[in-house]
Image (tube, rainbow, N blue to C red; front, side):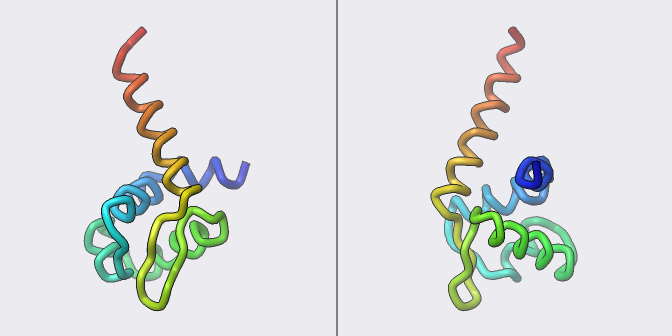
Length: 84
């Protein structure tokens, strides 16, 4: 259930989308996610703990698990637009 709570966060999905484009620093992510540094660091720490992203020096990158979660979320979003 812990992973579901994290994944429901708009900011987590925004970070995953940003990192799916290319690895980024926390400064780059803070600008694109529009949040405080302290909030962003909490989000990034939780995402690392869950294996959605990884950190190498000052750069964050999405993991295969993170890509999979993003794919699922985007598929659900497309399905919801079909209005069955």
